Length: 402
Ligand code: EZ4
Ligand code: CO
Image (cartoon, rainbow, N blue to C red; front, side, top):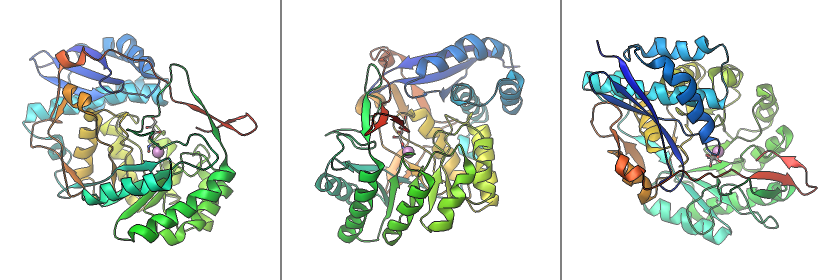
């Protein structure tokens, strides 16, 4: 019988930091999983290297479900981003191995295709409206069917989601950078530029917007109402979701669809949002909810309540994460949309994937497993480069949700 022989945690920074789990079996098969937690990478590395890895040696890699329960329930300490990201790295690598053993792409193991491609949305952003409109135009010209729009807010020096003349990368400080936030300025400006986007480009594509947890429930309700005429695909993270019931208030006031989930780490964190139909899209992602084993359980729960999926797919999730996401998206009946920012050339030097983009849809190559190769020789050329996400302060200096 083939057993888990080796557990490696690989850290590389080709464009940005990524943590990758590589499992090797006694008959020489390898599996890859993404375990990147932006700005907290080494906490996950230690969790796998010092705690999960030693317990996996000699275990049967075919028993994915049992190993998941062993790492989750068996740990006594459960949930939380570090734990669930570490479990995800291992779980994803086990699915990769199972695919290789079977000689089948992972989406086949998950039930086969429900669709011919995975609709994605890229990020259009600008410090000014003019820059934002140029980016939207560029993406629409490239054939994307959906675009996320984020613009700098007059009076605020920085705004989340806005690249500064290049790729958007929020983890940018040796220590956390401090950004100033004003919900008043944002609430005044954002509905106006979103309306201008529709006036200029029409309604023939899906328009998305990320609020990034910056509003209170009643402010979010007001925002949702103010943008109803824009027919948004969704507003994302209108308010922090620890109090899941607070979404009732937003719901009572607006028909703008709501999406939540990128920082949530288990089915328990989205249970009420889903069963009370307080959201329209669940955005949990394979890397931060313990891998494919748990994510598909969330998606199945969501299907019962007409909630569709829209997984987080920012570029701080590695190409291994993207590949796993696309395999699952291809099969999921209640799939909605997948976030996709693409990667800089350095990232592609380390992670070789057969993922293709056509007419705004992603697809995977028909390789066994996830279809991703990790290039060790390239990876060592990009050593770990510690970076933090910023923090946000209000105009009076107090801390706000970033
Ligand atoms: O700020 O992934 O929808 N995407 C986002 C991201 C997050 C980063 C945090 O690591 O909100 O850009
Ligand atoms: Co977001």
